[in-house]
View 1: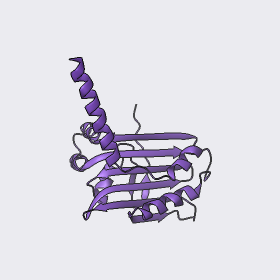
View 2: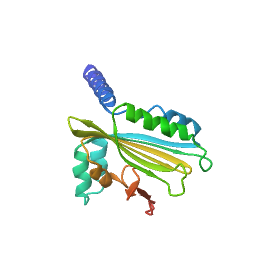
View 3: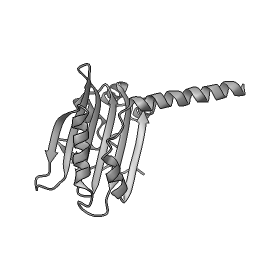
View 4: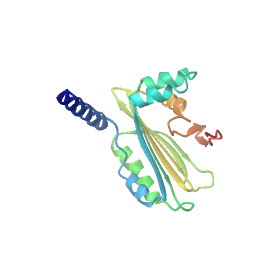
Length: 182
């Protein structure tokens, strides 16, 4: 009995390691942002966790449809002590890394006042289908990178907005979360 439990645990660990390797890792430039942040929120949800969490919103059919094709979501959110105190070179480095890896940039929205704030959307294609999506949101004292692995369209990404720590974006602008949870 104990041997079967050990074998089961080893199989689960091997499966988890294989799934982690299949997911897209965050760009190296993110480490510079992580080190300079005053607070950090980072998490990864695999497909089974996403399915479970989508069940908490049973009336949202679009969300469940999108989750069916998603293998994982990683969110990396960093807050900084003052406005524009993060290294803008780290953001440029991430963009260069995505371009060098063959990702296609679909959106590049900059702040009106010429500040370094931005919203970027990249996709990675495999066999003419979207396999990964990355969204980078940089504001005056916050940088958030959302990585979505699996079969998903940019339109489907809008259905994930407001769920799983992904900011809701409308027209290239982050919509503030006005709902309070107890």
